[in-house]
Length: 235
Image 1 (tube, rainbow, N blue to C red):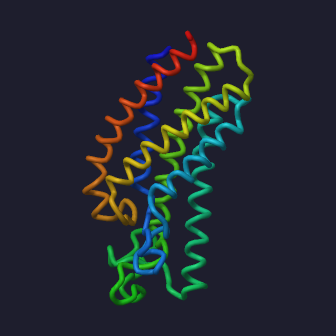
Image 2 (cartoon, rainbow, N blue to C red):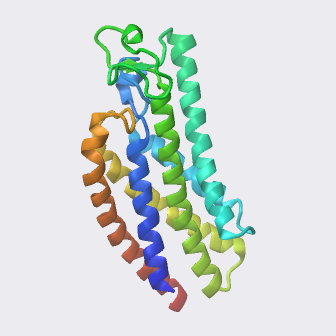
Image 3 (cartoon, helix red, strand yellow):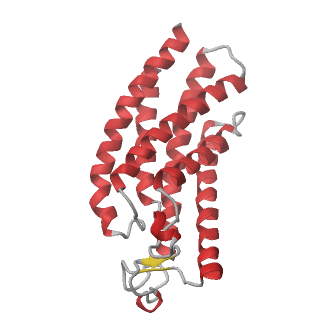
């Protein structure tokens, strides 16, 4: 039982870390319309994604576990997609620049030429279609990972502790969000700055060491979690 929890937490936390690398983040340069991506830091946007996903899963406490996991993934995807949509609306109608990137000649999804739309001296602006798709993939992976962590913790608590559904759900939410925050921040440090999605050369350089790092971090954190939960059950 505790071994299954350990494996579930490791898988969930690793998926969170991998998902962070897919989120197109432009940071301060994107806020100034000199780089493509969401105009905020990776830790902030991924924490928002984690909160939305885990709370979406927690809203389905009386449903089967697969429904909770899917709900968490969908919640994270909605949060990221709405953020990217309004970011593009601000860039297009507020700043007056089209979503484009200097990282590729044509958008792999739409085939639109990029050079004519990238302002001189910038790396792009807004969130091009390929980056938007990458953000959806990242939020899906992160949402699945966070929901797996939540449901695995909730399952073992509800089986072994005679607390109410709300109490066990609250404990599972707090634990899974802390796990999400730690792994997301560590993955963000691996990215170090801006990234435009899976088409970015930086992604190709960072994804393998990032996945290995997140797996190691996930293993250590999951072991601590199992010890803490074992203490709650047998304390």
